[in-house]
Structures are given as structure tokens and as C-alpha cells.
Length: 583
Image (cartoon, rainbow, N blue to C red; front, side, top):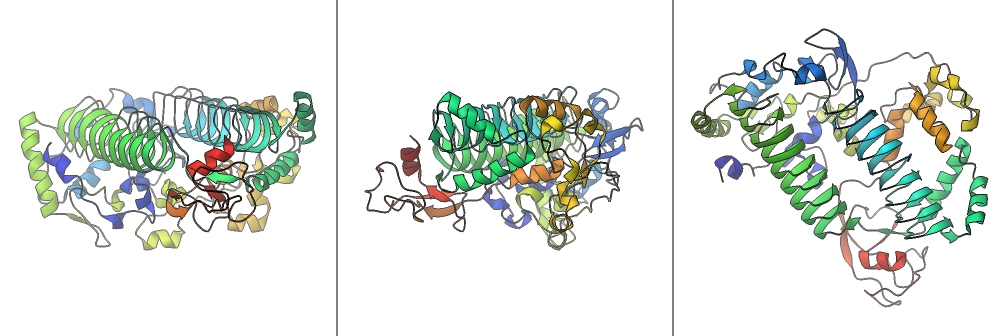
């Protein structure tokens, strides 16, 4: 094991956004812009492009095609290491010189408005997704097709409005459900079809409010809810919220896993404080949005696809022995690097492809590299970087906050750990005030036809008022970065007509934040099962069977770590009590 690996365990908890210690990713939260897109000029051609870097950012931004072409050479920006200056200062200078990708959107086709994505086709406004086709307005999408407006979806098709659902077909407005089809408003359901407003059902068909119906009765009743109407959907959503509150919730969704703490983890083992981990992760801690063969990783976010031996990484695939890197793929033995691909043995590099033994983008022999690297690590401790607030960054720390290419409210840190402008600036984070846009509204929110059947084709030409902008009190309280107005694209209208669903009333940003409110935080609390014996502690739910962990006149003794805080009203059961009730 080389020295770089041994020394990479140093941490500074003070460098994280509040609460981030619960899930990891180090300072990477502050360096990942998933959804804020801007128009700016391509630094190579001068043409207008879409970018995750706002126009005032002092970076050389290249269009995707130019960045991946042979029109420029990233090693031409290489610099000798200067032992009279801290490493991070030299890296910051390099960052403003080397061209960066306008969008982190790799191997994608006709998906120009997507970021932090790879291998998408015909997608629009998708962030943090890969291998999707005809997906629109989605965040954290994996292997989905012909679906819209969802958060955290895997293998969804012809689905809409879901949060944390997988293997769904024609599934709408559902949460935490798996392998369900032709259903609306499900929570905690598995292998269900033709169900409406149901909770904790397994292997059921033709159920409404958890009650069975014949096929004919189900179809007749479903028509009564008028699901093509916005008012009908709103009323059903209200009833769904009330209905799910009377059922026990699973303390954590940890499936086919061993020795795991966190939530929404599948097929993994020996993992601690891990969230949203999909398949085959092992020996990990403080991980979010990862999986598919992730091994031996600590403090990472957005990584997977056979990656291993990682520490404080963001957005990496097929990487081994990577430390403090962002968007580095198909590489090994890489530290303090950005946007490097198919390379190995790099330190402090940006934008390299098919390179090895480089420091600050300068090429060395293997012997020169190894000797210089040892000196640099010693120098980073002897001459640390000290930011304007007196925070010290040595070897083993993530990049200084001052080097982040994004403001706090441009990154996913704001989604998981929201701060006001004053709070963010008080902690040393940059903040970007949104641009004031004066849209000429052509269709106010109350003028939108209630039923999709009454929506004319001309709606595609309208500038529609966001509901939060229509009502002044809502607009003044809205902290969802709403855009005051939005348009309907033709693929969206076509989908809503096909699925008989009403037009949305909120802009895409507000819709995204409404979905975020439906997920649990990336934190854990120690709690006891709220099964009080024959009923839940609050007396709302009456158990349907005897539980193996206790008798009917005894409180369940089981304790656990859960993402449901003690102040919340949900009924939270341990795995044994929950499985007994849903089996």
C-alpha cells in the first residue's frame, strides 16, 4: 500500500455542510451542480451553449463535442510544481486555465439539457441518471423509459410522479414501491397491479384503499375518481396522505442485505450510514446514491459500476484507488483530480484523457512521478492552504470551499441541507442570487383546463404561470428556486394525453422540490419499535397477526437506526413487526 493510501484517512468535520457527516461525500456535496443550467458562450467557438457554469464563472467552458475532441490538448496547460505556494492554490490556478465540460453528460444522444448523466437517449431535464430513454424532468433515474416527473427511479416505464420506485409499469404518484403496474398512489407495495390508494400490499390485484374488489367493480370505481382531472388527482392525493398515516412504516428499506445501516439499500453487506445504494455494495461507510459493484468506499456520492477503494469521491464510475476526485471514470490511482478519464497515476490534474504519471497536468516518467509525489504530500502538510476564514487544508482534506466552481444554492447541498443566504454566507459558502426574469405570462394558472381532454394543442405555445407565482403568499414563502413560469413540451403533452393525466400547475423546479419533500432525510435516529403489543403506540393501527418478537400484551423490545425522526407522526415498526403485518 502506497503512502497516498495510508495518509488519506485524515478528516476535518468542520468542512462539511451541517448534517452531512451522517451520509458522507465530504466537500463533494458543495461541488456537484445537478440542476442549475445557464446559457453562456463556448470558450472555443464563441457559440451559445447550455452549461452548469453560470456566465460570470471564471472558467474556460467547452461544448461537449469540443471537449471530447482532439482540437485541444489538456497537457498543454501543465505546470511545474511550485514549492513556494500551497498545493490547493496551484490547483485553483490550473482550474481556471484548463477547459471544463459545459455539461457532465457522457455518451448521451439527443439529451442536451441533462447533467451528471451518462448513456441517455432522447432525454430532457434529467439529472444524475444513466441509461435512460425518453425520460423527462427526472432526478436520479436508472434504466427508465418513457417516464416523467419522478425522483429516484429504477427501471420505470410509462410512469409519472413517483418517488423511490423500481420496476414499475404504468405506475403513478407512488412511493417506495417495487414491481407494481397499472396502479396509482401506492406506498410500500410490492408485486401489485391494478391498485389505487394502497399501503403495504404484497402480491395483490384490484384493491382500492386496501380493500379487495372484483375486476369489474375496480374499473367502475376507478372512473369515479376522475384521474384525468387536476382536481381529481388533488383530492386523491389528499386521501392517499391520510390513508398512509394509519399504517405502519418500515423502519428502513434494507433488502437482501447483511450488516447494513441506513435506508433504501439493496443487495449489500457490511455498510454503515448508506443511503440509496443499488445492488452489490460491500465494505462501505457514509455513502449516498451508489452501488452496482461498489467495494471498499468511504465518504462517496454518485459512484458505482465496479468501483473500489475510494475515499471522498463524487460522480465516478469504474475507478479504483481514487481519493478526493470528481467525475473521474475508467481510471486507477488518482487523487485530487477533476474530469479525468481512462488514466492512471494522476495527482492534481484536470481534464486528462488516456494519460498516466501526471501532476498538475504535466507529464513525468514513473520514477519522477513517484519521487515528486512523496515531496508534494510532505509539502502539503508543511505548507497547508489557509482560506480567508482561517480554515486549514492539508493533505487528506477535500478541496477548499473557496475552490468550488458553484455557489452553495446551485448544488445538491441546498437540497439535502438547506440554508438561507445569510446562513450560507456566514459559514463561508458562496451564494448566487437568481436572475430576475420578466416572463410575459400568456396562461395564468387558473386558466389551465382542469381535465386533460380539454387541453388544446395550442398550450404548447403558452407561457404558463407557476402556481407559486399566482398566489403572492405562496410565492413569498417559496424556497424551491421556482422560475415563476414554465412551458409544456410536446413530448410531455403527448405522454399526459396517453396516460390520461392532467397538466401540472407548478414549474419543474417546484415539482422537483415537492418530490424531495416526500423522501426521508439522509440521517439516522436511534428509536424503539412503535408496536405497543396488539396495536401501535398511538392506537391508530391494530395488528392483524401475532408478532414473533413479543406477545400481544407486551411492547416490542426491538430498537433500530431509522431515518424517521422521533418527532414525526408515522407509525414506525421494526423489520419483524412490519413483515408480519404485510406478509
